[in-house]
Length: 139
Picture 1 (cartoon, one colour):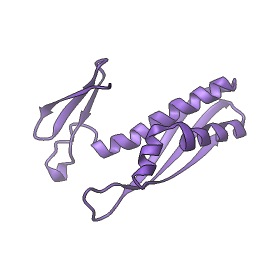
Picture 2: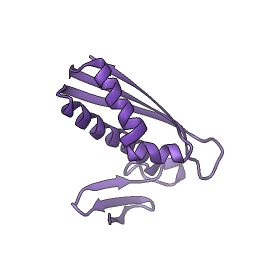
Picture 3: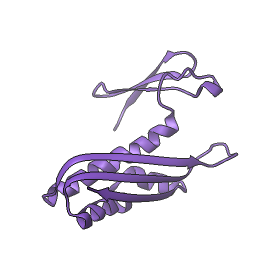
Picture 4: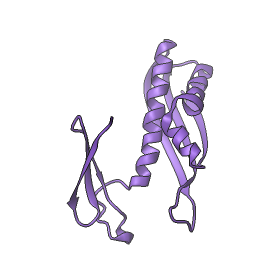
């Protein structure tokens, strides 16, 4: 069982979340809704989780294929459903930027496997109705 403990530490909505290993994340609401810009918005954390989950999958797959990843960055964009409460992610796009001695077809396949088979965050978003798209650039 996973346990996350949260404590309000800043203003009305500023929380510190801590996992069992002591890793800390700060969260807050927007200034417009009474927050103080103390931390990440919870819905943005979902997109960060998508990037992190898929990145781990991709690196693991490419390492097994003896590909050398010298640098890896990710850009995630998304739009939420307008005028709804709760407002879910309507769509999200993730772009993977890989550098190194990497076969482009293997990189594409690693990304495809992550996004369509292994990444639990991608599947969670998909099951909520999010339209997920992705692309990969290798240099």
